[in-house]
Amino acid sequence: MKIGFIGIGVMGESMAGHFKKAGHDIYIYNRTKSKAEALIEAGAHWCENVSLVAKNAELIFTIIGMPADVEAVYLGDGGLVESADSGTVLVDMTTSSPDLAKKIHEAGKSKGIQVMDAPVTGGDVGAKNATLTIFVGGDKTVYQEILPILELMGKTIVHTGGPGTGQHAKMANQISIAGAIMGMSESLAYAKSAGLDLEVMLKAIGSGSGNSWQFSNMGPRIVKGDYEPGFYIKHFMKDMRIALSEAKDMGIELPGLDLVLNLYQEANIPNLEEMGTQALYKVYEAK
Image (tube, rainbow, N blue to C red; front, side, top):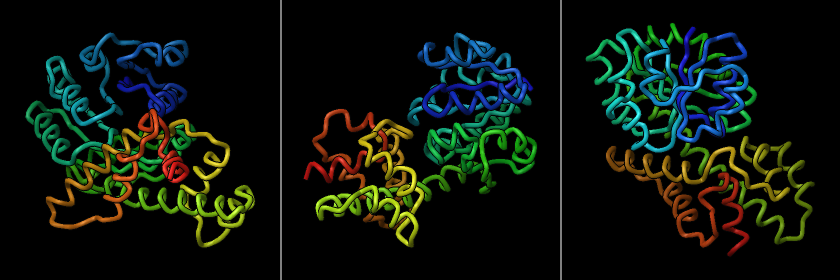
């Protein structure tokens, strides 16, 4: 297939790379071209703008930063909805607003374009190993058509319902992650303060009921002092704000999520937002 991919970042480079390795013809765009050099050298076609991706590809994936970026790429002048031909399928894998996902879906539908919201979880490791979890909202027939392509990136792929439901599912996922990150950080901060060997504690807790994906995968990074982003704190904070806004609209309270967001927001740690989510541990170190 002729597949477009917009957003060559920490996760996007690996995700697009899986398509290339599978023999598909890849058309890519990123705001910073240098981040796409490895894919270009591997044979991907560089496009100078979003519109050129739309004119060349029949199936286009995006994984970009913030909801405002998503709206600009899809609905702005020269954006995907304006530039893509009828029959094109657009799949937004950014974690964004459920309402925006519905808005883009309706805009695409009016032009004969199918738009799916399909946010992912699994971080840089999941992207590299093609083991991402993908939550897909939108038309079920289209979901079934693109499933073989999604399977090149993910291991657990679920159709969550109509437009916007993929985003709601991702919000539920992020709420769960927030609690797990806080629990892991507090556990390791306590163990360190008690003079325990953190390597030993990783093995012990990691083999018992206190284990979690965060503990097994992010715990070793913390012990090594590795706060490089598999998933940026700035993006996680964006997700938490969306989830809290949606919860407010639904009339429910999420005090745990609110606490984790406040811990990140109130931390006086330089460049914290550019670090990986595991850097919540540094907030406890600083207390």
